[in-house]
Every structure is written in structure tokens, then in C-alpha cells.
Length: 76
Image (tube, rainbow, N blue to C red):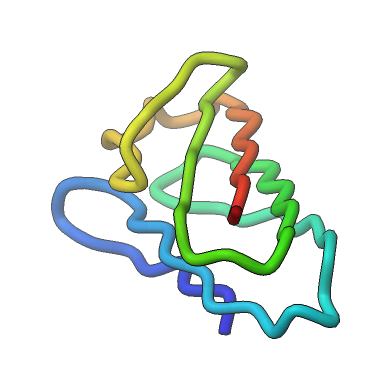
């Protein structure tokens, strides 16, 4: 349902939330880095991702160990 999958290229984010869940936040550790992921769901199917405030594909790049990343995901 959250669609946060590890891969060789980094984390892939493809959430499929029911429309009743409008917001959620999770913390995910991956390859020594920490991701704070905030998802805002307005009920659509279009996914936009932002990493530390900058637009990015839903395939997050490989992290640097010890780093912290803020990810915002908008589903509209």
C-alpha cells in the first residue's frame, strides 16, 4: 500500500493509498541513510516526489550512509 521498495538503483516510491488516507509520514532506513517520507494524497493517480525540496523522479538515487533525506510525495 505504501509502495516503498528497495532496489539496486535506490528506493522506488509508488504509493497506492485509498482516498480515505489523506496524509501519512514514515521514517525508513535504507543502506545506512534515514528517509523521512511525508505523503499527501488528494485522491488522484499522478505522483510527484521532492527530495530536500527539489523535484525528483519516484526512483530515489542511492543514498550516502549517515545522511538524512526529507521526501515529500504528492498524489493528485
